[in-house]
Length: 259
Image 1 (cartoon, rainbow, N blue to C red):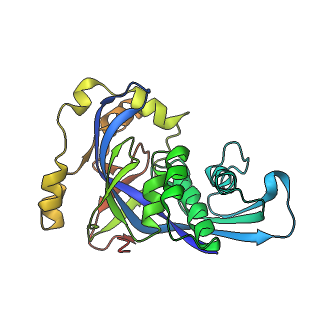
Image 2: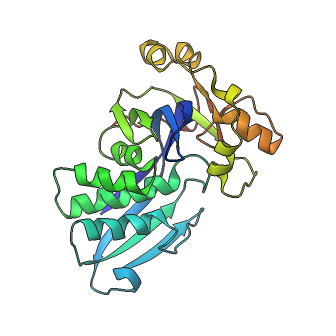
């Protein structure tokens, strides 16, 4: 079973403040684009370590250790949740840059859950969404994007979803060579209160008709924090916690996923 694991953009990312559990409360507009990894999950007759095998390929090779790879974690958590003792093999063709803010690891984990749901002929994905939320803040949206919902407003840590119509657009991506250790935590840790005093208006963004109108309401509160850490400012919008940037372009390379 092969699943397209779509990259995601945050067309809006509002930081609301820090929560008692240490995470930040956010409000974001997620959108999937057609850049994707290809994730294949197959039943196997031969069980290796942790009852599964892992075969990475492609330009960007993921960490294959089960304790740190979200795709492996997704498989093991789903097998435990559904009391499944079967053996499976995961193959991932990586096309999404690693740690770029595009949700590649989250998308791969979600694709494993999607593939297992199809192999197990599950009609109700609610249990899979619960597993997705345990795995990471972006995983529930990535699961949704693979199952007919390519855009959503995300609240809480990002795991509370309100499905929406995707924005028709094309984008170009710009990979930054900046490397930050524990990037997401570092960027959130560098936030200053003034970075998120002004909130981007999700309601007005959704009501706006053209992409040019929508651009007026787009923005990412994490961008000034990252740019302070790197010392570089870009005239583009940051993807998630970065360091990849994107620009909306009529002739852009990557298009909207429509369902």
